[in-house]
Length: 299
Image (cartoon, rainbow, N blue to C red; front, side, top):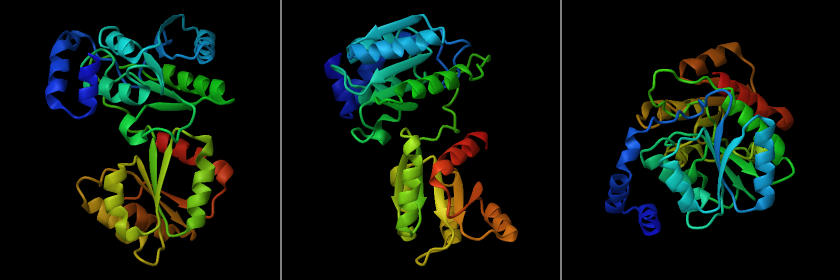
């Protein structure tokens, strides 16, 4: 099984087909709904080798009334359980034996089973040491002094979701913000945005200063939101958004503008071009990220 999973991660389609056949019975299990756990949370799988981190996570879950907590220290063992037993949340450390968290998540999403869409929390000592685009966890938690508070917030968010009653697997929520691309010719704005989003380490910030390469950059990064400066010397923000909206593979990405002007007529024009929101700059780094995330989730 380990060899098969490693081969899958190398892109060997024949091996993937073998894995899918091996676990074909998992297709008869009801699929979990991403971000839509029953109330209250009852069943969680925790994949972690550190006893200190394990104890901390169990403590937070117990405070929320979760008593059925399955634990594992090996990624292959965890995958076997995930393909057979339904869980409402999966918590996995980045570094565990046989299949680390970064690789377990895409394997879980690919194979049919009861947890194909179950929310996954990835624990890591640093958000800089793994490929966010490849892993794409639902939540990222750094192992730092703010870990307990962060976990409490995530569990509360997940347990507060509205369950589906139609028995169908839901698509991942399009209001989950995992990556932002900033297109702005000002280096200062890039620095301020990254400073602001330090309080949201699970949200990746990718940036480009030259708007003429914006479309190719967006195709490479596949963000959940684009922040676009209105006035740039090489190409205006209006021209960039027209290009984005004209591209079939990019047109659905929400776009927000940065502008120093506070002109109602111009705001209307930007919305007519397809802008989701218009933010005024300069902005306050201490409050901007929370304001943006709140507006994005409520849109």
